[in-house]
Amino acid sequence: MGRLALDVADIFRAHGPAWRQSQQGQLSLDQLKVMSAIEQCRSAALGGHVLCCEACAHTEIAYNSCRNRHCPKCQASAAQRWLEARQDDLVPVEYYHVVFTLPAPISAIAYYNKAVIYGLLFDVAAETLRTIAADPQHLGAQIGMTLVLHTWGSALTHHPHVHGIVPGGGLSPDGERWVACKPGFILPVRVLSRLFRRRFLEEFDKLHCAGQLQFFGDYAALANTTAFADWLAPLRECDWVVYAKRPFAGPAAVLAYLSRYTHRVAISNRRLVAMDARGVTFRWKDYRAKGRTRYKTMTLSADEFMRRFLLHVLPSGFHRIRHYGLLANAGRRANLAKVRAVLHVAPAIDSTARDLEATVGALPPTFVCPKCGAAMIIIETFTGCRAIRAPPKPRGAP
Figure 1 (tube, rainbow, N blue to C red):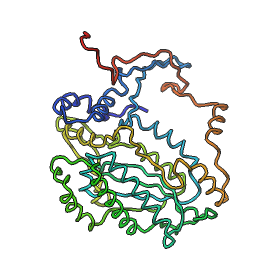
Figure 2: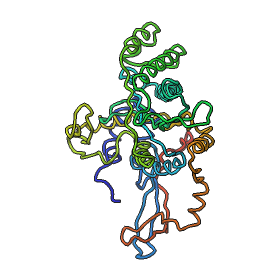
Figure 3: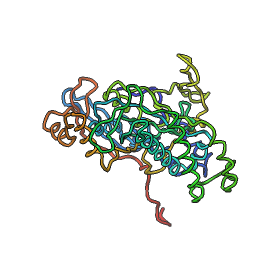
Figure 4: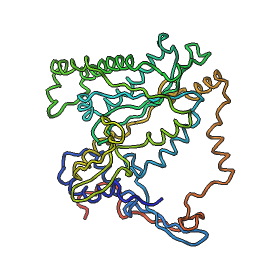
């Protein structure tokens, strides 16, 4: 597939050095690392290899990828690997899509407390789903879910929310039967919203009392306990957005959806339209509009585009895809075996056995010639001209 006309790396290469200089002391180390990785991705700076076609002798130079999880060019292969690993988790039931969103005031605090508040968002959303599902008045079952963190709106603004992929039912409390939800309905969103609001604010207040929240700028006064309590009061009364979509059209559709959603960060290169003297133009979706009018273009200055993009850099080591309940990593294999048993479904083929079988058969070539379609082989490798990170030089060294 050919290179797109414009990608995020082009914007950072053209405008990043000057903007980085103007923002000295304002960017975090994680943000600087992301900028550096994206600027160097698939360029001579990271090295690469020379490919040669075994059939027609066509040669190509391929540069190495940065593999940073915030880089739009490095997400397709990562998503594919993740999906292949998740195929064994699917069972033949309906799957639902549930979204939990933080209110705007808390989103502003979350930007300066990403690891703490994003982690709390995950845990409370999962607890809410499991609690309501376990209630005999609703489902009365143990459920599992996969939650994916998104921190952006379509216009790249800071908008933290988690998307949940939830099977349409669960195991009975004794684990002996499958309890299916009503067709086309998973759990009441109003009930989910109320419990989510109450539990999040309870835990949020505990974090404040434990001194685990930081406040800056216009929010510095919230470090005071009384001011924080007054600030929280309106949030206890307003509606919190929890949304449940109609079920997917079978397990295959779940994988198709996840392939577009799990490893996306901020914006894909396909949404970029142009970079010129006016700034960066990209496509976005206005959810307040209806029909075709919701699809629009927006132009931001290059500095503002980079600032918005970097709003969504995650803390180092933070997991943005998590599994809970029946799908939690600790007991997933045993729980899914039990689910398949009560559903009278044949056990899934173990992924290790499938991979072994694939290695025995003929594997497709890793590199394919664009001229004739034959396999290409690596005939030469070369290192980059400089590394993304390097140890500091000893004092006194030239």
